[in-house]
Amino acid sequence: MPPRIEISNMIEFKKVQQQFQTGRELIEPLVDITFKVEPGDFAVIQGASGAGKSTLLLIAGGLMQPTSGTVHVADVEVTSTSPAQLNQFRSKKVGFVFQMFHLVPYLNVRDNIRMGQLNKDLDAIEKLMKRLGLSSRAESFPAMLSAGEQQRTALARAMIHQPSVILADEPTGNLDPENAAEVLGLLDEYRRQGGTVLAVSHGRDILEFANRTLVLKNGKISSI
Ligand SMILES: Nc1ncnc2c1ncn2[C@@H]1O[C@H](COP(=O)(O)OP(=O)(O)OP(=O)(O)O)[C@@H](O)[C@H]1O
Image (cartoon, rainbow, N blue to C red; front, side, top):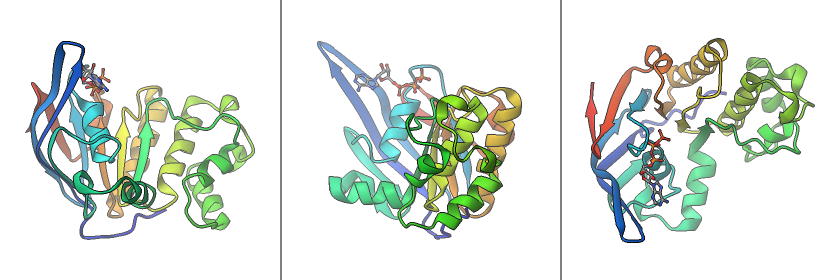
């Protein structure tokens, strides 16, 4: 499913800071985050456990508002948008992929993918399942699938509405090397068609596919 080609499929963080107050402790995983991911980039953010990678991705997806700073994703300023507009933004412009897949256990593969769809284009679902090698599992429930099949289903759900950007949190964290390479290959194909991928990962397998690597350390981002 090719992404909508938009010149504005970029992600831009400017001076983003995130603090959490837990009891008397102030945690500040993001101190001053400024970076830009251009349309068609497959960018990966690496960093130690607890560095703030998931927090950064939640902010990019409009699921968490930062303490300060501005974030633009695919021509939307997610840091100054109402909750209703953020819902629209997420359902139209963003595809999410997570390490734990987050499929609905009582829906089969076809219906899980349909959850991500805005129109009722059943033909598009069949085509995407074929492309991702899922056609024979269309009626299967998540518990009956291998980890690779579950992640390909999650990827199909993330791609079916032709998002401008895909945000992926450890997308290969639960996969063996073969399935990991397949999922990364699909993300690579999506970005070659003009989509933008921002992934966070500890893994090294992703570096082979990413064209940009950013490192998150001490609350700041540096490019390598
Ligand atoms: N809602 C929250 N309230 C309080 N602290 C939080 C909250 N969310 C995250 N944190 C803290 O912020 C820091 C960054 O967490 P985050 O999950 O972003 O790290 P990460 O780099 O994704 O880690 P990992 O690689 O282990 O998943 C951690 O110290 C975490 O405990």
